[in-house]
Length: 386
Image (cartoon, rainbow, N blue to C red; front, side, top):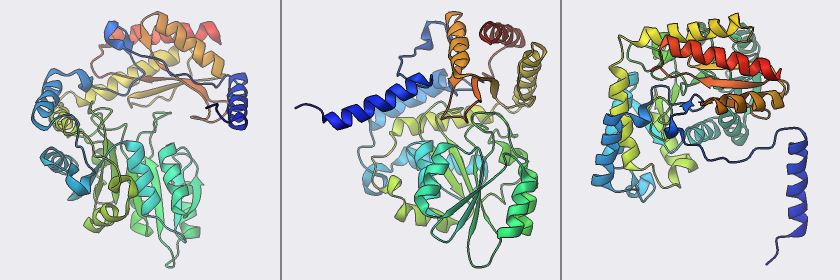
């Protein structure tokens, strides 16, 4: 049977438009086992290939099989998931939580289910698409405050606070495309003055910050202020899936009963839970090394800045080098790939128009000498195209 002609033409036209703008995406096979240095993925501690973590996943496969084979409210929630949830609560210091199949699923479900019509969501202007998707699904009113601008957030809270509606404040801790972060301490102070539900996505801060390595919420000591903390298992923990932790156990109970993304999907494979449990223990053991991660990130950024690159001089694992032109970003990334270094070429609509960039995800395992070498190659690749 032929494809509907009208639909085919519509799809072709949209793809042509994206190609003309230099924004068309294609799916490529990536395999860094050939010795390529992969600084495009988010495995900041190379946990996905750590022998002990791989062994834990293998034991999980042998014991539980390849799949949970059911949704969590049927028989999908097993002993490995229960153990993982307890590990996560202990790691972060929360009493209640849930495990999800992905970070996108977690954010979309939480923000699509907890806010409702008549509520107000105040969100950082650069929050992840998964958060925006959930907010729009909820029917709540969305207002955005300027990126990482706590003063602007305070002004909106002053104007919008009302006993007649619930206000949600939504932010990432480390932002996924810029690698910067807000003043969580100042945001916690706002929570002492205004009534709101605070949701923080810690996906890119896990392992990198805090004595236990549980993120910027821990580092800033604001665990008792963050109502919903979201984390991922697929980045620093080297597994797959995500989780959310709650100050109020009723939040968990409500989502278990009303979040469609949780109720109607086959659950995370038990082996992934086993891998994440082992990864948490590994990241917790890095307490003495943890200060060096931030120091090496700052060194890398300063090296790039000395070469004329536009970068934020902070200390997160995400380094964003703004180029503006999407074709420049693609060409610079291709030049680095030919030298055995993979970085992300990030373009609209993932980032705003005119802010195409290279995105480098640092590895805690890289020496300072290797970081200097990579920074020099990045600078040369950017200089050759811009």
